[in-house]
Length: 208
Image (cartoon, rainbow, N blue to C red; front, side, top):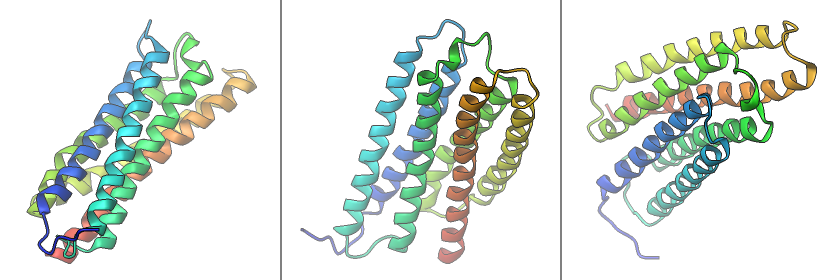
């Protein structure tokens, strides 16, 4: 394997940025699944394509780490950040696929709290995509991780209220089980966004 002794910093930050932009695409597709008369299979397939692209970006990032002698910051942190960004995408794709495979979009409407949770994820994704390019300078990032943590609290609240709704007797038992799986994936994605932000905070503190 050919090694580079001088870090091509731009390549690392570009990969982080591409991965984060895919998260925005992922949440936008989840929002589409809640629209009336949507072609659910098409949205699910596009979500899978975005997830596959994110996997490829992660592989590129790991390959870049292994072929670079000096990385712009701690290589373990680079691995961790890349893996966590990929984890978010995995949860988004799983939620979308479950909505499709379980036929939940055929319900008259999805619970309002589920839409609220997706809205939180959409905000987190956009904040993350805006923050990734700033890793290069390690400036103006504090507002990002503070807001991500605040949104994670909003997501937890929406998730708890969704569970209350699911177990209220409004839905039959099988539908409750299906929607609970989707809710768990959405909540896991929300938590994963916070893990990304916490890692960015740790990196910024080390590099300051």
